[in-house]
Image 1 (cartoon, rainbow, N blue to C red):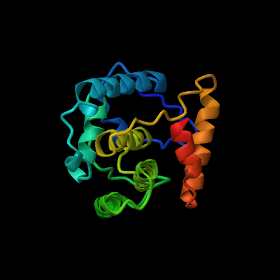
Image 2 (cartoon, rainbow, N blue to C red):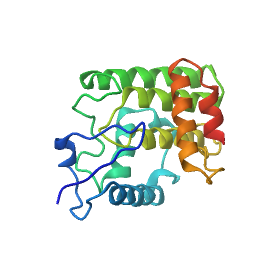
Image 3 (cartoon, helix red, strand yellow):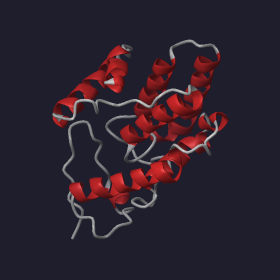
Image 4 (cartoon, helix red, strand yellow):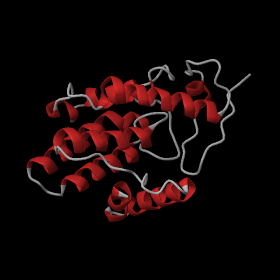
Length: 199
């Protein structure tokens, strides 16, 4: 039996070759997949991602950005931690991903060194650019949110974002607000996305 995926608004569909990278044969529905990915991410949290083993100097490096994705999805996808090699409806041309990521890392280092923005805005701008590049075949939103949290904790010694979790009564509305905030960030207005991240 194949994998039946019904995507939520704003999610990027996987190609057949990407679906073939699924490591768990018992997964047959989107709900199964979501559960397995969440278990993998939770394990990554517990094993590594918010431990004291992370040093601020390693965060703004390509290898670390890839490692975070690998640890988030290594038990679910064979291509976890690897740049995508297909075109998507969002994101840049896949061949430009390594260059775009290095430019983003350099930009973020400058923002931090020169205190161009508040810590929250730096983390959110970095998160937004990661999603815009769309590094991976799957998990870009979750990965970029986690990277923003890691920046807040390990670079700025602050608290991680709540990402709309303070209002769990309506997850559909929270997702709608998140997508709208991303669209505003696409236009250069980061305030709604910062507000959502802190809500």
